[in-house]
Image (cartoon, rainbow, N blue to C red; front, side, top):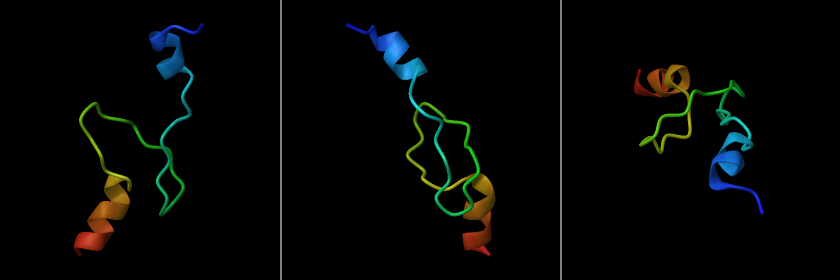
Amino acid sequence: MMSPVEFFRNLPKKVCPECGEGMQEQAESYLLECDRCLSKKEE
């Protein structure tokens, strides 16, 4: 059985569905788009 730490290390990187760029994950973030795409939506 895989340890929980190893499980989370092996998860694929989060990718922005708008531009396809890899995102740096933050512990309490539920955002789907990257900061650049989010700032474009606000304009």
